[in-house]
Length: 234
Image (cartoon, rainbow, N blue to C red):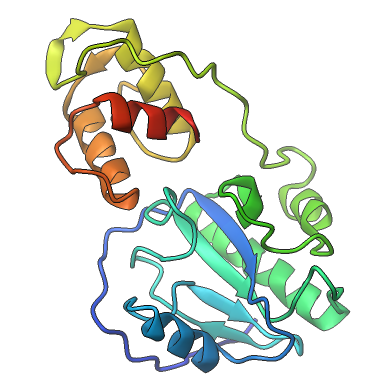
């Protein structure tokens, strides 16, 4: 596999991406280059191409953002994922063999590099039809994950807001904190080495702040009504 260095010039990037999943997209354009995507995203006021990789119809693979740069491709998951965009409009087109084989090879490389076991289409995480109804999502999941994991998330009950603020307190158990921890872990945020233990410690505080940052919420590390609802709707 050969990845072409696109030499894109970004307008400032935020680093600290911790890849735990791969998220697949289409460009919604029948013919475009990574330079086109970069220009589109710059015109949106972004740092530049929001994806980490771009796969053209002829099978060529291009580098977008560095892997350790936080992406701009999937709300709530930009700091825990690698975003791959494919050239094409897969609501009206189908993917050819060259592009499919390169995409599959790229996924295998990223999966092994970061020990990733989750692959999602953009539409499975955000309200969108991307990467298109004709995108071979199920096929590539099955072949890339060996049928052991479809990438679909198990549902956690979206219990109602408890009516009080959840704040840093490493010495007090709270079942509502445990609910939030489980939900944060489910969507790809680490809550620390103890996992979902019901104690609002340093790991949970960092996870909450990262989530708030990714969702453009006030970054205070406190779970109020807005943060609770935003976490629980994922």
